[in-house]
Amino acid sequence: MLLPLEKFAPVFEPFRGKAIGFIRPSGNVGDDLIALATFQLFDKFAIDWREVTPDNCEGCDELAFGGGGNMGRMYHMNWDLRTRCIETGLPVTILPQSFTTPEDREFHRVFVRERESQQLYPAGILAPDLALGLDYLTKTKPQIKLGVFLRRDRETAQGSWFRWRRKDPVRMCKSVEEYLELAARHSRIITDRLHFAISGLIVGREVALLGNSYHKNRSIYETWLKPLGCRFAASPSEALRTWEQPERGEIIPQRRAA
Image (cartoon, rainbow, N blue to C red; front, side, top):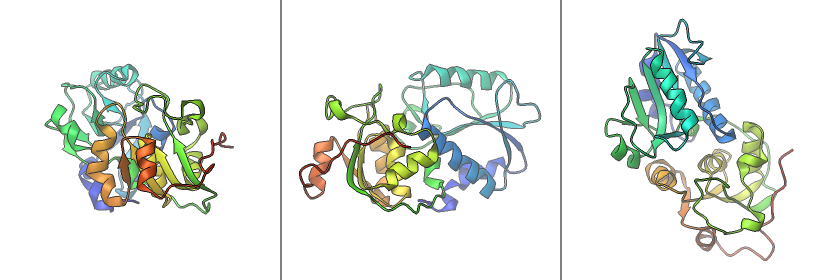
């Protein structure tokens, strides 16, 4: 774990003695990483839980909507999923998320994972991104000195940098293990994928996190990742300048994970 267990207690202790239904948001392998960490943390805090849907949550005392996504209307599938959770009539706790726009709806508790989001939801309770609580050990030794991995979606802020050979790790991996092991194969990682950066930190690699299209990456860096040894840069070029200049040809386009 990158953070001590007690950092997650405010999120999980209120669930004790209740039957909790976990709602998995729509997402990618980075969201699956958060879900795996959530399951581990449920068990470490001895929570009675099971994964449910809003249409199949009989016997639950409360719903826990999975963390790590984006509150607001940027991703309509998850907005609609939260609507269905509210319509069950059960108390809904939002596990640590970021806000892109305000979402002033009736939730039981809302945890935010960085300080900028508290400005959009002042009642939000600050708590770590749950992926920072994942237990994972790798036996993989670094094989590549430096990897640059940039997202290819609406959250990118990197323009055309390396567009011709841009590699998005969520498109390269089908499972959480592949995601973590892809990170483990590199000594140093530059990425604007927050949870690939966290994966690199989990497996003990040097990581430079780049900004995304809104405050999430920088704010999580300032709130949680900076003390963990992560670096932050506005661009891949700036990130490279924070390390010694690599030798020619060292940045190699990555193959799809096996």
